Image 1 (cartoon, rainbow, N blue to C red):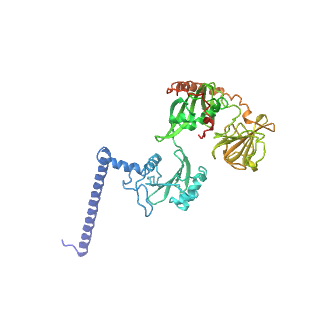
Image 2 (cartoon, one colour):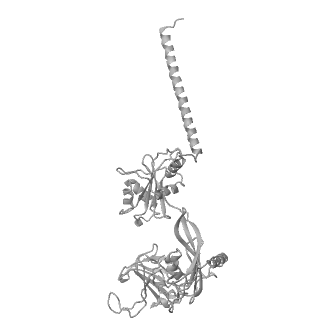
Image 3 (cartoon, helix red, strand yellow):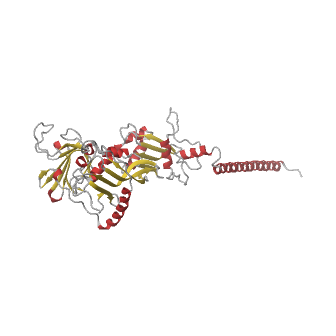
Length: 501
């Protein structure tokens, strides 16, 4: 039967629609099959990690540490500034990226990982922290947000040219994460949360500690003998500090004296950071005899000191030298001619010359009665102690945070840093001691017996001492140096050499 004209048009329209649908279905099938083949090929490349080309692929994946597993291998690692030639990151920057990969990358609202570009910039010669951020490419708004997020964690005044600023941005160039690295172990991070605000924190860096034990003989100085064992010569200051009041190294040290030390080496991410805690030391001398010191600190690590094998602190009620100094530049002298005033002015204390910034400790427990500028004394801290004693620390560069009138301090607590403020000819600490309102010579003040560890801590401490004494005894010493042809003289440089730990 012949179709009417309008029926014929409807039939042709249905046929055309069916043809279009068929083409679309066929194209969809082809696309799905193509994607499936690509995924199978990708899986095959991943599973054949030992085949040719996999090493290069793995290298690219390790470099872009914060990118998700599905990110393309061609994603840039560091965005080059306009006009600059993009070069591969140095090894240190790659390690930084690998270290950051242990933290999950930020996510989008639907839970997908955001691929990030990572840029490492130096702090440089910036005028301040905000200036360093903007010079490194941060916008003014981001710089202000980062400073607000890290305000409680970072002292922005202490930025140094070699400090690192690490920026991580998404494909839209929006800053998602920032890290400020002041040193290998001092790191701070600010991360953008879903609400758009940055939240800051200090990054905990795991430190691996390995115990080493070394020893030797003194031929000219303890510092040089320590250096010969690949230890810092400044460890001589630890011996001076530990045996203060028991051994006078300036008078008693002799050629041929021996020493042993058990110390920790600290590693971060497999790299040697330096020497850590001194666990035990032994000094054996013709004049001093055998002396041992074992380090012990509170369970929370807040404070520690050297103790003898019975658990009694080697330091008594006073620190007669409340800092690690270079030399005594002026002693207690009631008839001293003043180097500036050029007339006789009693010198009611001891001047310890030391580099600016050297830490100064409280000589004993007490209460701060004054902290601030005071005329010729420069920056001064005064502390009142039990039994009518008072100590004074003058010419300080600055006082420690929290050291103010009425504050309680403990022996060996940092109270300031060596400076040259007030009437001073160079950086030093003027340390003075009063008893019942009258100045006395600090050197003449007896250093009585130290405190005994609490009964509950003694068993554990003594078990540690047994092991540490074994470690010290197991240290083999090389042959002793040949005796000098003339009468040996005191190794004067032990006390006079700079002791900066």
